Image (cartoon, rainbow, N blue to C red; front, top):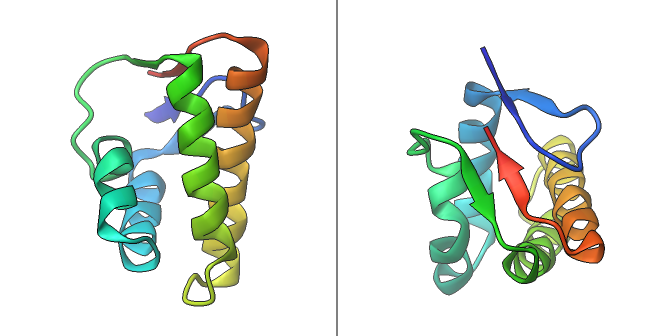
Length: 100
């Protein structure tokens, strides 16, 4: 069963894909940024998570930096960019970014 992420196209991703992306994010981000988002990408989500729109905007910026990092493989950077766009859409709409 996939993970449904609001404001995203496609909205569903496998848990394995999200966790694998997390490994690349952990290697591409400074520790302070990784700590802010690891609860989403570290494989520890047990329930529906709603991220307030202001926090989603912060996450979008972190994900954009990771996507552009020279150590991020291109395909994983593209996926990080998709997540960044979804987070920014939620922030712009002033809606929670929902993972379920």
